Image (cartoon, rainbow over all chains, first blue to last red; front, side):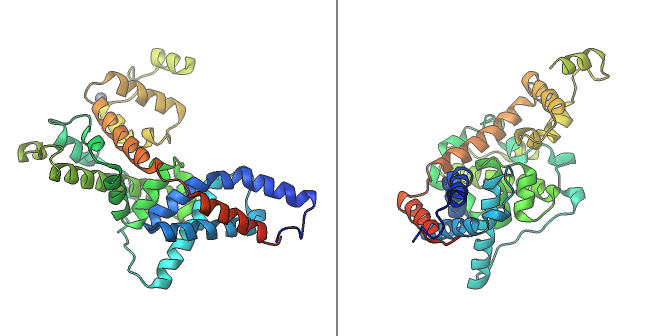
Length: 207
Length: 92
Ligand SMILES: [Zn+2]
């Protein structure tokens, strides 16, 4: 029960926690759900994340990004669960920093080149239902998925993603670049399969 | 803005950035990771360049689709209540 410490300091601490951490519960839940792919596991992750955050609240630096701090806790819990479960974790091959940003012929999105004749605006993305989009995100390797969700869905800056995942900013950029391209390809393949978009001809692919 | 305008008048590159540079900076531009000056130059390039603009549009549409698909997921009320109750029970 509460009430062991009801002084002004404890009340104030809880107020700050509510204002800075509890407000992000939807985002933490979404993140947990994308990591775990299972609502029950996501619920447990959210609860455990917030309990840990509350216990460690004194270590949180006020004014820094509480959302990415919560994501860090959540992801560490998730990775530990996976290791404990001895489930195979998908890992991606990290490239050297030199290759970590698009360069040369890689600048132009090959998928865009392939679809530009028939669908230059990428309208096919809109033809795909939410469930399929979510499924495609959840199929990404964990490193890519985490980066894409943190950036594209939650809008975190590279520096926060780097800190949350313990990798250099260059690696974050690389993961985002590769994760997005992979996701776009999966969504495109699905759109073709469903007949939402005509497959690109070889001629266009070679262009 | 004024600084950008002055640089446009007196700077070496009237258009700020080339097509190749704009496409190379596309990801960082979309992610809001460019400094203000570079971002405004890239923005201007995409605004006026018919060849590059579709690339920006394609990537923005993609990101928008991911966001919209994710928005439907909110923390269930019973989970929220359970979490807040559990925090109440933790002794400081
Ligand atoms: Zn251009």
